Image (cartoon, rainbow, N blue to C red; front, side):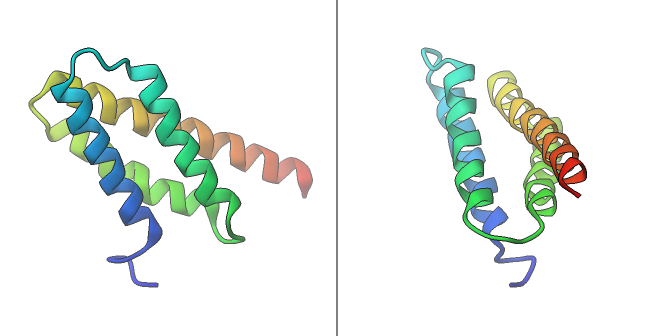
Length: 101
């Protein structure tokens, strides 16, 4: 699958859509929204046997840049939280993989 159409592209779009909703609705709480996104990541990671860390990194890197470039504080907060949660999940996955080897 090409870099333009990989499953991580849809995950990035989902994060962007969720960031817009978080930006617009000040009643939304960051923690449950972030947990929902990470649940979606887990579904994708569990569904196949491929480079999971690479998959998550391809979501994380562009979102990290998007967070740095956005002018809206709430949107930046959500995208930064997603990037950090993905970084934590990547590290956890790498450690688990190393222990099982």
